[in-house]
Amino acid sequence: MGKAVREGAGVNHTGDKVSTDKADIILRIREAMTPFLAPGTAITEDMKIGSDIEIDSVDVFDVVMELEEFYDISLPMETTSEIQTIGELAGAVEQQLHV
Amino acid sequence: MFDDMQAAPSIFRKFDTLFSRREAVMSAGEQPFGLRFDEILSATRARIGDRKILLAGSNNYLGLTHSEPCLDAARDALETHGTATTGSRLANGTYGLHEALERDLAAYFGAAASLIFTTGYQANLAAISALAGKGDHLLIDADSHACIYDACRLSEATTIRFRHNDPENLERRLARLPEEGARMVVVEGLYSMLGDVAPLDEFVDVAHRNGAYLYVDEAHSVGCYGDAGRGVASAQGVLDKIDFLSGTFSKSFASIGGFCVSRHDAFEVIRLMSRPYLFTASGSPSNVAVAHAALNEIRTRQELRENLWARAHQLHAGLTAAGFEPASAPGPVIALPRPDQETAIAQWNALLRDGIYVNLAVPPATPHAMSLLRLSVSAAHTEADISQIIETFARLERG
Image (cartoon, rainbow over all chains, first blue to last red; front, top):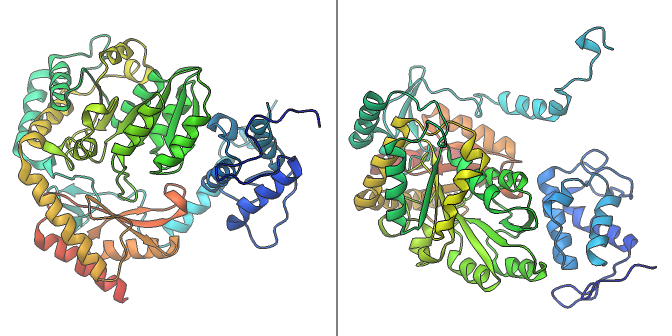
């Protein structure tokens, strides 16, 4: 609690309501990564993308685009190239959703 | 600190994955990423050892590398101006022939400003990184060439990717941007991996309606599409609305180098500050002279395009009939997605053994982690050449 939600956040471009809580964002990241992961792979906040989770940089781009679409946000490349963990990715999404 | 380098952190450790991937590719036969041609016999034939190879992956779309006008231009420039300029465009590296080519490119495209660069890679690197500065926004197609990604990194602008060839997705991203700062959308005319064409007419509309400049890289399409070969923007009737149009001399222009033209005369100012333009030697006299000779051929010889397109349709139809599914409509680039990397490598080797060279494209260089056999058609291919390529692929499919 405490952060203001930016105007329009919580509704994606198709008009669907989406949760802006970090735990739900992590669940969404897991869903976006599913096509690239072995079945049953668990995902936690501190896992490193590319080493703990075996996914290559091109697939990460697709995951980011999926999240951008879902939340109706834009994550600049300068931001995403610095991201190492699932928690950081969720944080970057959260930051775009909040003012 | 370290007694010897054995104890130092290895600077090569980061390449461990790359080493193992290279090993996997090499163990399947020839080395596709280090293939050596011993002699280039013509625009469509080469020799490897004692074997003659039919080239179907050279991007030599108009087959001008061995044309008399280009060979003569190279010889004359070499004799008159020497082998190299040995200097930057801003110092001793601007000759009359550099300026003459810039003038004729401006006239050809109907542009107000025109710059040439030492390579095609540098054209995008120089122009995009100079145009977009801190506080500006670059919106790039997700399938952009590596030089566009590198240009974005070199600029200090905020870079946002949008879905490949999707003007609607671009519009949503433009709508989310703050009002401050300039905006520039960057797309390509013909995408080199899958051979698909951009809807530039729609991109012009979306970009300009949202206050964004449109930058189009026509590296693979100038010479092949549009009125007198002016590219995809010309073919779609929007050439005069494109803000910046770049291209390369290393494909249809049968040389090496690149260019960027603009309808904005202020574009000329980047000569004074663009690092990839300034801090490198200018194009060699013979390279620039060949590009200029090729421009004249591209502009005047419609029969080259007619042959290119006849061969492209022949190849596309023949491969489809043989059971392959090209990724895009007929065009100078025909890409065949394969089920996996191992199949693509094995088939690439089989084709080479049968005397056909095509490009092998595997992740991460491809969109959506696809493994591709990529062919490029040339105006210098004969009907019999294309039949030979189709027959070789058909044998491959039959196993």
